[in-house]
Amino acid sequence: MTDPQRADELSERLSAVHQRIDQAVLASGRTDKPRLIVVTKYFPASDLRILAALGVTEMGESRDQEAAAKAQELADLGVRWHFIGQLQSNKARSVVRYAHAVHSVDRAPLVAALGKAFANRRTEPGQDTDSTSAAKTLACFIQVDLSTGDSRAATISGHQRGGAAPTDVVALGRLVQATDGLSLAGVMAVAPLGRDPVAAFGELAEISATLRGEFPAATGISAGMSGDLEAAVAAGATHLRIGSQVLGERPPLR
Ligand SMILES: *Cc1c(COP(=O)(O)O)cnc(C)c1O
Image (cartoon, rainbow, N blue to C red; front, side, top):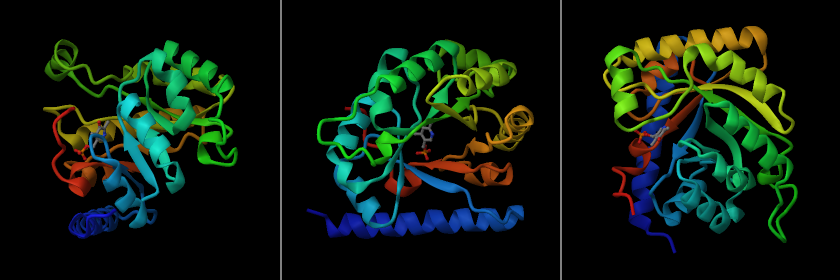
């Protein structure tokens, strides 16, 4: 059962986001268009069905319990699930069952946990082994903490958003690359509160260039949310993670 009014609303909002991306691409002089990952966290499965019918094929979720339930309920849609939230190592076993990519790889023990979980993963009984969850590798983005000075202190004392120090990215990349079942997709970041996103994503682009110096295939740059996608596109983002501009204000945490 689809609510036709909600379907119209999502269709309009999605078109507006695509227009915004197209304009940002044009303004930046790029010839490629970044991928749009629609961040569906906290929104009901009915909205995700509408989005899939509108052509959305990549969806982002940040909490394992919610993502696992949606992936199971919506298995028929064939969407790719991107895990974008902070990830505890003990959730790795669950995440590898449905995720196409993890954007929040930020420490060595998590790399080990993901590798082990991927090697031991079981597909659900009756699950199609050709489905995306049965992919040969799990794409891993190294999440970078781009906070500086005061904002770094705020991140550490307040809500920890995760991310490796910029100087640890290459070492983590080596670890991912050396782990069976994992593939190094590139880097990911959230622009820190209180820092100009242009400067933050500029730094991310430099970190990406350093990583590509050693791993030329790790071309991914996952950056840009509803509030700062233009800065991310200008800095060369390959994957945009857009939530509220497509879906509206997020409902409160259940
Ligand atoms: C929620 C979230 C997004 C989407 O944010 P919006 O501002 O709603 O577009 C992107 N990335 C991460 C890591 C998130 O947690």
